[in-house]
Length: 97
Image (cartoon, rainbow, N blue to C red; front, side):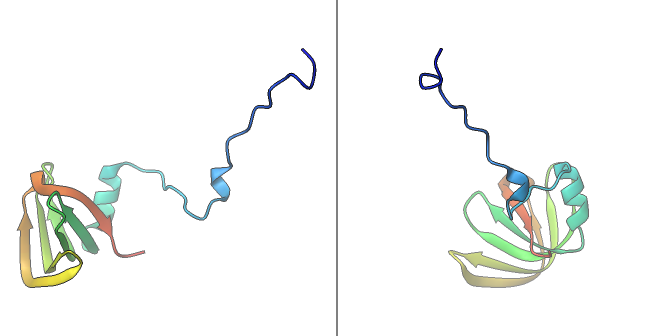
């Protein structure tokens, strides 16, 4: 096979130099690390709850404090404590860096 006929194989991009790096760890490690911190809980319906994660169980049932409800990005209601049933949770993200 000649040099002109051979196909060049591109190497994958080096993701370690990227600004956005994935942290290693399990979802359970993440959940343990955000207890007592500010989080956003997004429901399957698209509604967001911002507040302090008090506790959660193996079914993803969530207890939050100082909770605010956001619908389409607008503040809808403010609650002291909120309890969210786990089967409604789409994801949880941390607001603390």
